[in-house]
Image (tube, rainbow, N blue to C red):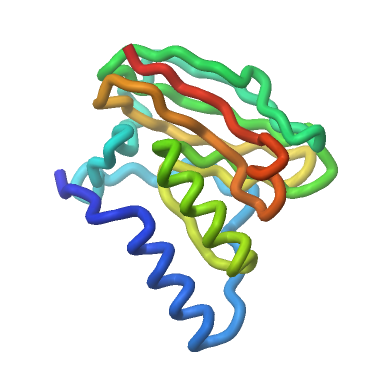
Length: 166
């Protein structure tokens, strides 16, 4: 397992490429969960990409144009591998991005500066209106983490939820 250097390092590189090479797409909206390759799993402060064969629970989360997730507060067990099925009930693109509170705040700021920035990590699902996406995640660390929509303006409007890992 590799230790992920810093999620925002990747975002900064993407932003630099964007400035140098023109606008990039936001990501493949509506894409299903990332293909699992154990040799490519990277640890983060809030867990790691989960093996779909080891999912212990499925949690359904909906997103709306009221800039809210339902449910907005989740509790999982340390070590648990969860499949999030994320449904966009709204009329605009939304996403669910897992992370620490500070990392999500920093990423939201970067998205405001570079709204077309490409970013596609196992800890996020970009979901077109009326569609659904998946994240398979293993919570390896206890603590309180967040999930948010980082589409510019959505995070600022309160589109944030909490994950308590016990």
